[in-house]
Length: 160
Length: 194
Image (cartoon, rainbow over the protein chains, first blue to last red):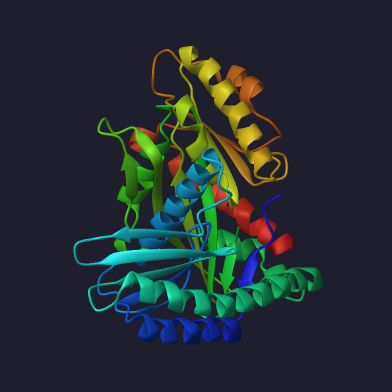
C-alpha cells in the first residue's frame, strides 16, 4: 500500500511559518520555501509575485532527486545541499530529512550567509517535522480523524 | 505520500502515469489540462527532449473540489517511457499514492507493454510498494487504431489484480477522465481506510 499520510497540524504549520519568516530576514532572502521531498509545497514566506509555487516545488524536488541519484553514482551518499547561481537570482536548497528548505535570494545576500543561517534554522524545522511525522502515525492509529467519516457520496461528489 | 495540511485545509495526492514509450501518457495529461477550468489547474510542466519525448517528467496540479471542508489536490506526473530512462522513472515513483498504467493497444507494442509493466512492478518494489496493494488503474489506449489487439487478450496479458480497466483514445479524450476518476477515487478510499 501507499505510505502513511503526512499530516501537518495547524499549530505545527504556524511554527514552521515563524521559522521561515525569521530565516527570510536573517538570510536577506526574497523567499523561503519548505517543500516535501515528493514535491508537495509545505509552507513559504516572502515575495512570490506571480511565481507558480506548485510547479516550483515539484521541480525543486525533481532536481534534488536527480542530484541525489547522481551523488550515489559517484560514490557519495547524497549531496546535502544544491546551489544554482543566476545573474540576478540564486537558489540554495538544503535537505532536511523528508523536506527541502529552499532559499531564493538576490544580490542583497550572499551564499555564505544563506548557508550559515539555513544550517541553524534547519534544526528547528527538522524538530517540527519529526513531531508532525510522529503525530501522523498516531493520528492514523487512533482513527479519530474525519477521514474515516468520508462517505462514498463525498468522493462521488468530486466527480459529478 | 498523501500530504494533509490542516492549516490550509488541503489534501495533496500524487498520481503517476506509467507505460512504454509513445503509449500516450503525456497525451492523457495534455487532454486533462486542455479540458479543465483554469481555476482548477496549475501549469502543465513538461521536461521533454527537443523531439517532445518526456525526458524527466510531465507535471500538472489539479484541484478536484472539496471533501468535508478540505480541498483535494492531485499532482499528476508522467514518467519517461523509453527503456533507458529507468533511473528517472524510479525517482518519480517516490511518494506515489496511485498509478495509472497506460498500455498501447497496437499488436506490435504488446511486448513493450509487458516489459514496462514488469519494470513498474520492479521499480515500485524498490521504493517499498507493492502493485497489489496500491491504488491502480489499467488504461488500454489507442483503441481507434486499426491494428489493435483484442481487449480480452490485452486484459489477459496486462491485468494484475482485478483493477479497473478502461479503453481509451487519449488524443480525443475518450476514457481519459474515467481513468483519472477511477484512480483518484481509489486513492481517497484508501485514505478513508486509514
